[in-house]
Image (cartoon, rainbow, N blue to C red; front, side, top):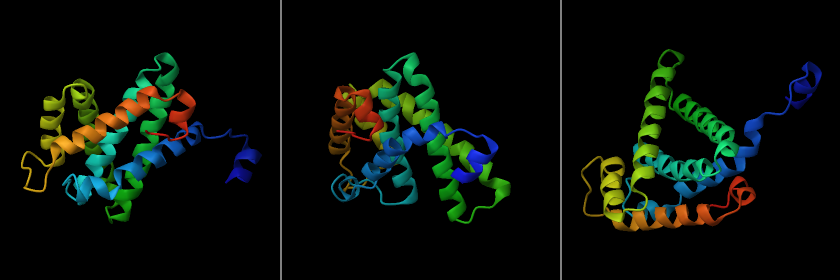
Length: 173
């Protein structure tokens, strides 16, 4: 692919700079602690919601960069959409409805970003938001929203304290 880009004059993909960060977001979302200790449902929806929660924290940190972060936030969102498209296609969803599924995922991601932005510094409100999003309003006996909220707040604090270079390198804590 690099060969074709060089022949046809395409430059490097600016999203490549965000891949280490997105890789770290997904790795964190797959950490078994969220599911085994936090009681997050180990389902497609539960895993999507963990990616969305951690991606929201990263996007909030990027937003703190002001105008300098605006492009990076958009590019990170594009990386997320590309990944979700691949995931949807792996599930066997055909071309005709892929866009519809992606639209729902992007809308869900936007909603989560908004609510986590509003509640990250308010533990009870964050826990309520997590119950709505991670457990669809019905946390079972294994659900530990306080633990999940605490871990998410720790990631948010780590991102806030990290340099821009560290964030781009995927250091979430």
